[in-house]
Image (cartoon, rainbow, N blue to C red):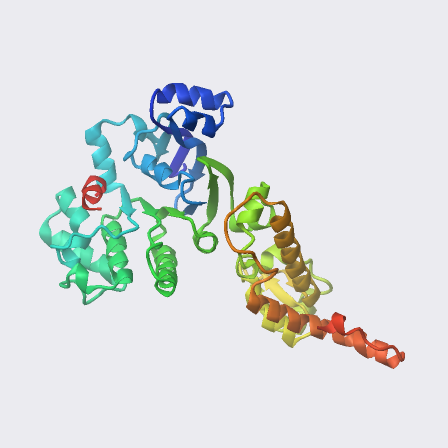
Length: 408
């Protein structure tokens, strides 16, 4: 059974919201409703989140991400549609029952930390358990363990203003983990952090996920963050989900020009994997494995194959989780994958909807350098052959506290 399921969710703010939903269902544009003083924040959103999955909702500011998230735990009541949590429709729960679900089964991590300044780090991490009525000794024990998991051992007696932004966000994450909730909702939880701290927090979350295997709905406007964290990604635009799929699905098969434009800044070499571009094994498996410079897993990012392919003429061997050889990635195939990336970027720049942002170069700089190294090596045999024939090689060929209390 799915852990979380959203079915045809609508959220409309303004006059006569039910009438607005009927108009939207009949094809009325969102802008027409706005002209009448009504705002459709979320329109017909449906998706499913499986247990242990990180489901990322991504979109630009104003696309409806945070509104959607707040309907998932009942902070906002849907105008239409329903939310099923472990098969139970939480949109029709009584206020008392809904508070119980939010305090014990669903936790939330906020963008701006939402820590109590008059409580210590330990007391903040234990707050959700305090709301549940857990004894002081037990909640301090569980909060201490969650702080340890989040890398804050030894900081229990400190005050929030003594911590850096990244450390404060770790306290917020520890508070959510301490309740041992089945579902974590993270509303742009890392967006306020500096880039290096933000990446550290992403690493921390992925490391925790290996052990805890929580079900997480993560909101972000950062596509690279979405691609790095998400098992499944939903792209939102103007209140609607325009595509749902894995990071590879969205990169390789964008559903619209808008999505293609949205992904043009992504370094595909860090998202696409060996399993996504591998070719069938040519020859005997033992011979391929013996000649290969290395054997990698199907989930190995392409960026890790550059140096391997540059160092040897033989293709890199690709094995599954059981160690069985399932494919190979040659230097030519890797270059082809990079060429497909450049073509996708150029097409997105020409055909995409108007997405604000700076112009994008055809490839990420470090990736372009790696590709150039491979291209020169591939071009060298052709250049040598031409020289032997007396032909000159072509140079181009080689070259908030209240909300916390409500949600806790």
